[in-house]
Length: 187
Image 1: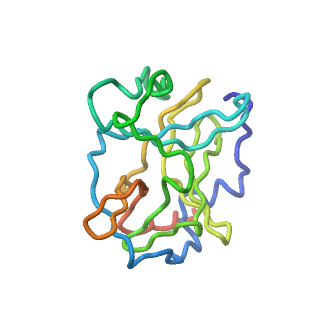
Image 2 (image 1 turned 120 degrees about the vertical axis):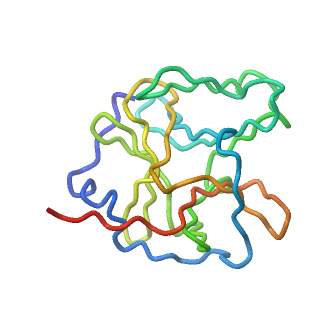
């Protein structure tokens, strides 16, 4: 992952500001968000191709039959996706794109109005939500750089929730927060 380029200084100033992120409801009243057992999930920066970039994967340990992943180290934590070594049907869940996850703030599902991407920043990988107007908010970070799959730890106030239709649990995970973080003050 060392070939990833850091974000620009201008973008870095907006990272935690949440400036201009106005919710664009994408089925806000149709779906609900319900708590999940966070210990059964892991957010992962998964390398793409030769490792020059990464994408978000979310793994879920549905049953304890076999482990879906292992962790090693801290700051950053390297993840070994064990689910790639066996038929994980019914044991593990894997969410790899916007069909499987999205950002939700309060009752507002951002859907395609906020894109999630893994972006390098100095000696860290950031999971960022980017609104249609270009405004950004940091959702999670790796806490360091290393080769391979890295765990992304949610920023304070963010959690995972499952999309529900009535009482029916769906195969979609929200990166959720009750409200957007306050913009960072400029000093």
